[in-house]
Length: 297
Ligand code: C5P
Ligand code: MG
Image 1 (cartoon, protein in one colour):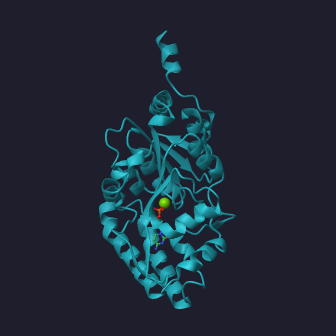
Image 2 (image 1 turned 30 degrees about the vertical axis):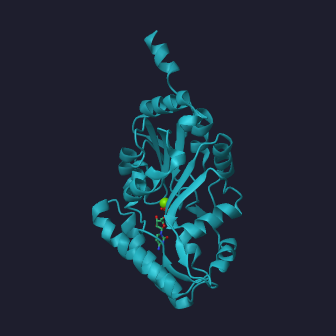
Image 3 (image 1 turned 90 degrees about the vertical axis):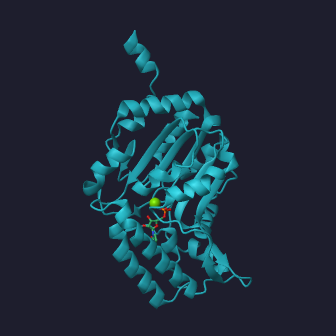
């Protein structure tokens, strides 16, 4: 009888059996999903990273641009600036994903990266009115199944908090052009500050980078009214820094973390399995999050 009872209190989700899905403790994952299902959509919130989590990492063997890299467009910045931004990416991205260095160690270097790139962008006097065209002409792509993901959350009135260290104005344009900027979507990101003529003059507020999302969670997310009374959290990310995005959720009950392992698979697999509840290895789709959401809501 005990064995049957145990089975009944667990979620059975066939997609979790795919070989690209790794779990440190499968049983705990199933228990958590089951508990979230019992509590219902009214108690759920979804917190997701953007670049390389909601967007694809690569497509046809080519990297998909992040919101920062979408700004690398001839309409917005000159060749010299483009070259400098690429050099910075080549220097700092390997550090960002280095499994051999701690987050504390990386933190000041990430501040250096973001600060330098933002300075360069400001010098280019980017015009707000050209952002939409740059997004349109970029090769940005949301993960396969994104529409089901966004639409289901909207239908079920579950708030989706997109928490991104990318550029908010570009992020908004990407989801708008994909027709999924629904009213339940809330965004915390680095927003551009334009002067009256629509020319970029600064970035607003405290800088958000990969490894300070905890501070943003405590200062911004915790104050969002729509997230209150929703103690169950589905968290999606691709960086270990994304794990702190739910730190502002007070009186949380069940948190399920899903990590996309896009790059440096062999080096980072162990660390990811230790840190996220569910790890999706080289999976460019929303299939697993969608299956979990379908079960819960
Ligand atoms: O949305 P998310 O928080 O993932 O956005 C941050 C990502 O953007 C980082 O993982 C980083 O690799 C990338 N980035 C970039 N160019 C920059 C700064 C960050 O591509 N100048
Ligand atoms: Mg990311």
